[in-house]
Length: 355
Image (cartoon, rainbow, N blue to C red; front, top):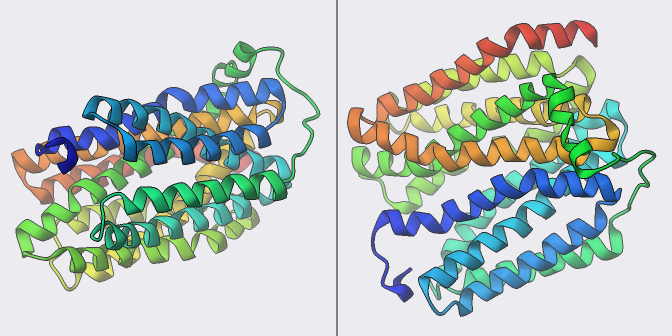
């Protein structure tokens, strides 16, 4: 942001927030349109290609306003590819393997986050535009892989219209169970992204390298355990892993604000394990509840709620930390996870009995 003489945190944060706003707005739109068209591949390819072009265009933006406008459009293409990749996985595998499929996808996404941030920071220290150039190339590669390698399964039925596809949200009330867990999981991730680094720097005087190590302590087990926990959810059902993971995760999130280094590393590792236990069954549950003809809408809603949680998490966490301290901020985040688990526990038990 130095290029545009932007120094305030609020203005800088717009770069992230406006991208997430596009995710919230377009998640359901792309999913529902793909349901109506009955195809995923063309949307995934367009999403990757558009994202690659828009990311490169960020390097050419003449003003801050232009940069933010391009960033918003880029977000629309990002969620097109991301949400419909999730949908495509559900199209291509059996319903009894949804947990496995979401686990593999979650593994790839989490590993990308775990390796992309430090690598981007390293090449960005040479030139701030290098991460954008490199990201554009990777996205272009994703478009090529989609074009030549992704299989498309012909959908047996399609909704009569765009509105008919959106009616899934009215017809299948249970789908708001995984949506709630998607929201709260991403909401707490916002605390880790926005509040956690500040807590380590201010309270314990840790530098960027050490802070990155603590983030890796969470991200590595979170990534590596997605697949096995997804398989387990296929074997024993979604409910038990989701309940156990939520309760354990809520305790860990609360503990973050009360645990000092070096013991905090252990807390982060256990948090990664608990997070991995939650994500695959919640994503698979959205697929379980969806009409096969409306999977795009179902996964669009899942990503909408997740993006909304991630968008407001850092803001809420920062407000609480400023007013009451970091320990209260993480206590609120952890209690929010526990509250969601308690509220939806009767519905989850009912779902488990029907399986």
